[in-house]
Length: 625
Image 1 (cartoon, rainbow, N blue to C red):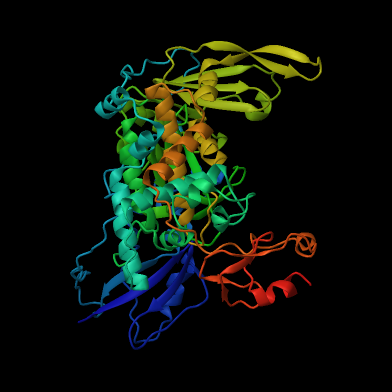
Image 2 (tube, one colour):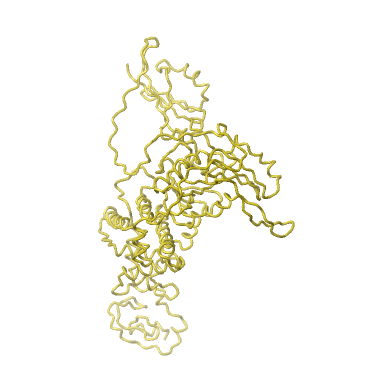
């Protein structure tokens, strides 16, 4: 008796069969599942009809009913089941194990023991599977037409101030110290160590990168954000229109190119299955350093985009975003734009726990857990994340939660139909209560639906809307929960706006370079907000960036002992001055290694007026005499 392994490729209502072994048969044509039994009965005699078929689905993926895109159809509040699996799971291989025996021998179905797994050296793994949270469908909920929901037991918000923030405030540091606090020493030490290691592994020579040189390198990158040139080598040009004295006096151009070619934050010999393995230390270290900022009461959760137009498996396209192509990052920020926590999106490898409530709720709960958000904080999120099950879970955890809802998640909710509600005048609202949750539908230019667990009773405020028929403003009643949503939702977008204003202009062909540059800009924006909110500074972001970059260049830069090779453009002489035949005299410059402009041999003589090295024999011919 031996075992036979059949591998089935599970597609959407289709099955391909692959039989392993010497005698193999392959069905290339997809078959519907109801036809599989008939096809199996006509197999050759040497193939045994399986008694049992087992579809093996990864435990941590079984309830992942959402796809990898942001379409409306993929964010339904479904309960986890195999009928709503994403395409990458439906196309995955599943093993079917069967014992080969006579049909009537009565032997039970057995499963062979799993082979021992070799120890893994992977350091960055997704979260371990855990118990899924209960999803309550809308049809099982009881909605009441009331304006006073049950009071949610949410702790009162208290100002959370870490000790580090108090110490920094008392020392009154300058902007450079705040930036180095946000971009922590541990990350800088990792960068120095891994860059030197990478240079040794790939080029076979020592880079000998020091901490002072790395900080000077950061200063040059930050300077390129507000003072950009078409080519980075122009910073070291002697031409007045592009020359940057602070950069050229801090580091030689050749040394900058050497660091640029070798900068790394990981050891390339210890590759893991994490798609963001090359930059994972950046996210982990920055998330730790960003905790120095006290948590504000209002927090917003949204997706950030890091612009990237090359080829990478994690590159995303989001229609309607200011940055449509790039890496997507789940972000938790304050309403003022301070980033508390960020996790890059990489499909099933995203380092956020799976809760069973769907992708959107899992992101919010995962960010709250990883950032260690204290109870009493209020989360604002858009319709990608909001479900009624999320509201229930956030209430249990002691968090406030409010967000817009998509129409396809409001099935079995007794709202007025959309077509009928659109005929009502602007400012009309409809209110439902379910437990401690308040659901509000409001008619503006379009219909807006908001769910919240932070309202003790329904209240309204007055806002102005333009009336194009009367050509004047009208006072319109707006629900308070929608007003709060508009006020506090844009924290992540505000952070992205600040990052894009003075984005590092130095480019590289490496796929991870945009993330590396984005991290410096993000730390700079957080440092500015920390300086303004905690220290009490009043300078704007541009002035703050200039102070940081110039402080890094002056304090850690090393002025070259001698100038490098002069630019060819700087030695170009206008023809009008060259051939005017006036005041051209040879002088001895006492420089041994100048090259004659005409014969390219060494000379110590030059033209006093043109400033061009020339032999005495070449002097007349160069000036056209």
